[in-house]
Length: 247
Image (cartoon, rainbow, N blue to C red; front, side):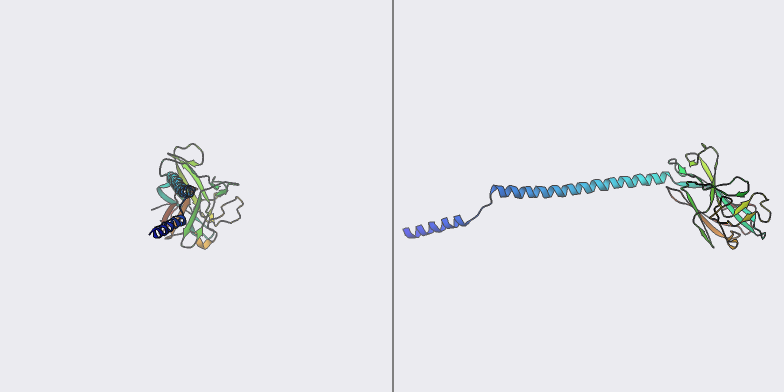
């Protein structure tokens, strides 16, 4: 009996010695590891949230600025007729008026050309740093950077920024105009020579067969540096007059 009890006690003591426990240091290391990992994840999530919030603010601010810089056409478009060297009538320029759609940011309307009613119009402005581009499209052609001039109408402060309460008349030139002869005379207009020498336009219609005439649809796009694009879509009438209001 005594031997049996001694053997049982010996077996229990052996089992107790063979079991291993977790020390306090190991527990601390594991806890620290969990804390570090959790901190890294928390920092990553917070950084992503801050970045996304900042990007959202920038997007909203940019959208508001673009909205405040949007132009709006005012009134009707007008087309003007001349005659080429073969006495064929054709439209040499088209005008329309724009203003700020919402009172806000000024729009830079520095023009690449001017028109002074002397010699040949339009006249290239040497070194003009213009940021607003106008393009023209009809059934026969696409002009990506057509010559244009600007004339402010009504109250304005004399600069080329379209500001609150101001209106500007934009004129695109499809043909060169010879101001030394009557606009109703033969050879009053001609296709643009493409030389860019300042004595007339460069970038308008350069082929006689493509001169804008009757019953032709066309589109003008005005692309400021900021804000929405203005698109003017019109169709020429069945008969051309000296000045035409296009609906």
